[in-house]
Length: 591
Image (cartoon, rainbow, N blue to C red):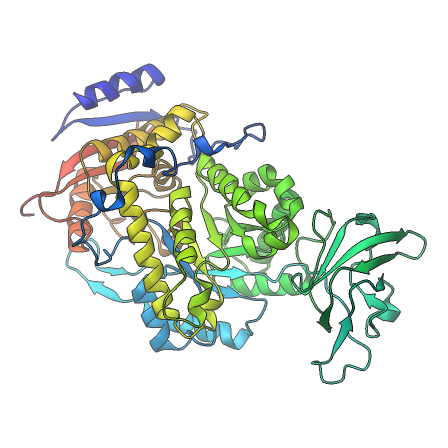
């Protein structure tokens, strides 16, 4: 009856799309235009404000539940192998060797972050080589001859930075100057001060500093260790005079933040251009673009990658790295709608963001950005200080556990570690703990009435769905069927990444096992919530043969077991166009 009801709804929404019943179990399909080359995402409207009631989180529903312990099986303490929320881990000196990296991978890392603010070319090459050795292989008989753990790489650029100059007489690189509360200091942009900074004249390497500052604005030195207040701006010589708000020591070439100021820094420094080109040479899967301020910056980076690919002789249809825009300034928040539209994903970079805007507003901004990314079906990473205490301690603080948990409830596709795994004492334990927290949060969200909240959120609030097309109807119907029938997996057969991403946008509570035609597509899907890509089945021609083989391989890989219900989602030719389908099936007792 449920599928008949869905069929009526699809017919009502898509009067030109045929709806079929047949085969083994009910089967829903929707025709697609022959001109449809890919499934595009709806555009996030800048006019919509995402209030707390719109978020796909537990806030409203939790009040109707008794206690966590009523919902969680106390015996279910072991972490299952297929979490929905992914883990991005920064790999550095304490985790780059093969043995510790293998442990980090086994603990649950899916994407390796390469921080190009610090890493050398030699270090990057070592980490790439060892990551390849970590990909354990499973040999099967049949259409999928070899299945590898899909592990992706993310290149994080340094980005255009504003820094102070070299201190006068600093020959060792470790000298400091003392800045005293109440004193006056002049910020200089003339090159003659570049290596002659003192406690009275401090060089800043941004020539247009005076154009974006006004009296009363703040200047933060060395991540806020010393705070200045602007008292006077001199357009004639470009100097900015400030009073010192607190005493502190300042080193050479310290970072400078200008909260609430709008700068016109380029999207890429010369170092970024060199690093991005190198990233294409080693075939990274994602580029996390630091200090993105506007959508033009995203376009500039994408055009530069296209230029590099052309110079390197890449085929026109070879995929470029996906661009993950890091939101870490007031300017980026102001232009967030346009940045999101041009980006492939978003990173909520809370470190610099917490310096650029009032720190008490960071959580609000995080929730707004996650909701907006969920609304258009683009992946979002929450980063910075998630389990920072585990850099030194084997257990996190309770506040850190709550932080990771709430990122999962908010709808993050991935959570990220930084120094904890790059230079901390417990990289393996950090990832295992993060995986355990994710499991606990997802188990809670899947219990009671929380499990269907994402679906009602997307459908009733119309956040993601502004359009009514065949692919959307099939994706939403597939997720509805998975909830209604307690399915253990949604299996997607695809030759592009848009269909599984669309399924993920409706936030099912089970893995989305996606059979891809190549490893690049698989790696560029691994960041998205719930998607477990597998390379295989492209040699099979008949859809029934493909679907049967897909169920068989999903069972062999441990996603499902005999007797479980699954939803199959696939696309086949339909006249001159294509037809998207989903159908409910049970894993056979024997193949």
